[in-house]
Length: 227
Ligand code: DX5
Ligand code: ZN
Image (cartoon, rainbow, N blue to C red; front, side):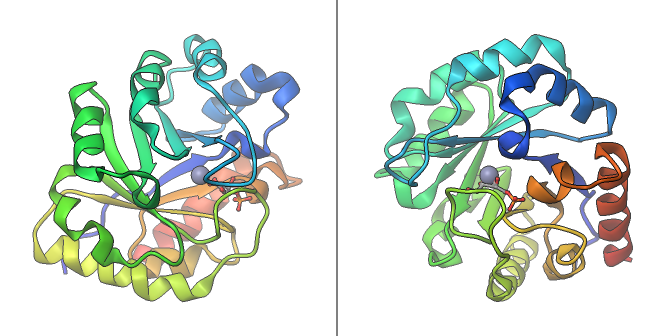
């Protein structure tokens, strides 16, 4: 196996107070977030409707923390440019939502962003083996997308392991991100399986100690799991 990739914490603002989104993002930056994760839902691919490009663009000047947009959107090609202009560094599309995933990932790269792809719990890693060389990150969903605060699906761990071994086998430079139910209770298992970028919403924003201790604790547990 290759050496471990650096741990990164990517809080999901889906669990933030939308009435003060700018302040919440400033607080995340101050608390040591490595990235900020924007959950973009279209009400079709998932039964919920959330954040569009103008909202992200409004927050962008306030913080320097890199933005990643997780597009839970069917046929997202017409939106890619708008998320680039809004200031996203990484764009994550769902394999299940793209008719021509290869073309979509190439378009994201052409726009100067990091291309990334996400898999729903039911979708096997095999769905993306032919585009692995095009992405900088693969997001393994550990809940069915659509809502924060859902129960972690532990049976995704073999999938994370399988992806990790494919990446190592091919000597690719790809982060493995996990999203859904990531907390103190599950972080050791996801990192042990091979994930290194951790999305967390309800666990971080719901931590009574505050964002900074919550992020530090999650990072500490993740780093410990790698050693
Ligand atoms: C679910 C979203 C997640 C979600 C994570 O569709 O992609 O980012 O907000 O939330 P928690 O950490 O609460 O499971
Ligand atoms: Zn997400």
